[in-house]
Image 1 (cartoon, helix red, strand yellow):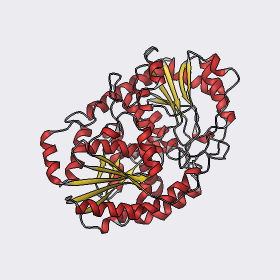
Image 2 (tube, helix red, strand yellow):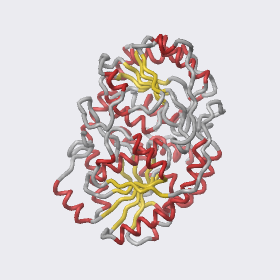
Image 3 (tube, one colour):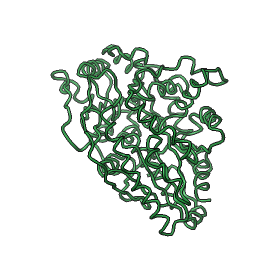
Image 4 (cartoon, helix red, strand yellow):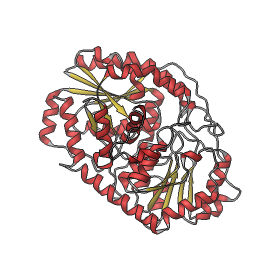
Amino acid sequence: MAENYPMKSDGEKGVQEAQVAVVMVPLPAQGHLNQLLHLSRLISSYNIPVHYVGATTHIRQAKFRVHGFNPLSTKNLHFHEFPTTLFENPPPNPNASHKFPNQLIPSFYATIHLREPVCSLVRHLLDTNHRRVIVIYDSMMTWVVEDVPTILNAECYCFNSISAFHMYSFFWEIKGKPFQAGTELYEDIPSLENCTTPEIWELWRKQESLMGKVRSGELYNSSRVIEGLYLDLVAKENDGLNLWALGPFNPMLSQQNKDSNKHHKTLYWLDKQETNSVIYVSFGTTTSLSNEEIEELAVGLEKSLQKFIWVLRDADKGDVFAGEERRAQLPEGYEERIRGRGIIVRDWAPQLEILAHTSTGGFMSHCGWNSCMESISMGVPIAAWPMHSDQPRNSQLVTKFLKIGLIVRHWARRDELVISEIVENAVRTLMASPEGDEMRKRASELSNVVRQSVMDGGVNCVEMDSFIAHITR
């Protein structure tokens, strides 16, 4: 496996002597679990013990689904399964008036029961020859760590799972949308209307007042070579609060990488395809499509005549291992007609390895930030179909600022059915047109810049070294 940040022997000795431990507190949703698990790998490579905490089912989920490395064989990475109360585990509703995964909210509320175990772990680590404990927590888990700053020699750092572009848009709107140099993209920025639901805003409001009291700094899964302008703008709004962009968290895989912890049927199939000939279609773990949407997407992919891998599964429940899942129906005879040209995946797919494969030339995505960073890292252009949360604004960053993708469905038309002709045209444009070739070229160039940034002496390597030096000071 290619490490994102090369280890320095002198730095390793300094960290060993520092006797610092890190505790990771992720939000129990796949995109959040995954990002902090990858960050755990990076920090542990500096010979710092990392303790990744959560409910039993969510620790199991994180370990089972991670791709790009094997957490069970990673030195200095420790998992702690803490009890929580039983929570409701409703299925997703593919016919809801919005796409936000409200079914996860009971599991989010159950995390309040991690508050005491996290503090106990911090105290235990301080009592066992660690002079400082660093707690890195998801911004939506502030209430779990609110007592940590009262513990001597413990510090908290807030991880924001969104892009700096999206974060700055909040500040920009709060200030009344002033024009600033370099922020022209905000003039036609997608609305936040229907991005989330009142239930998640209520959860956020319960923690908002705690945020400024708890954090000693902020972390982003981003890079200054990707969105340096917006990271600088966010830093200015934070009144001098320390900010580090440590991404990409995911390993920078290549097709020659042999250390993946699993080999999937899709990868064998990709080995037989031509370079850049396959579009990967996946809308993440928090989106459920209606039967009507599935049929239109199926027909559009078929009519495009392009090769594809389509991950067709329901959104996650709060406990992904409990209960039945809906098996979405495809048009009659569909899988037989696309045999050899397309693959339908109904379970978990190794997204990072698929995107890293040379046969993959496009990604139809919901534009969750985790997926955006993985696609950017691997040099794959995006057909953006945002569904909820930060995704509409991430799609703006991808298509208008980075210019490495196109829009399938504009957020302003989110209530309209995306018909098969729209899907067909988007796929053909991305995969079989000069316009798509230009996007692929820019995506490849950006990927190369990102890869250089994580090499010894690169921008991201220096930033990670800076963070490690800060927490081990």
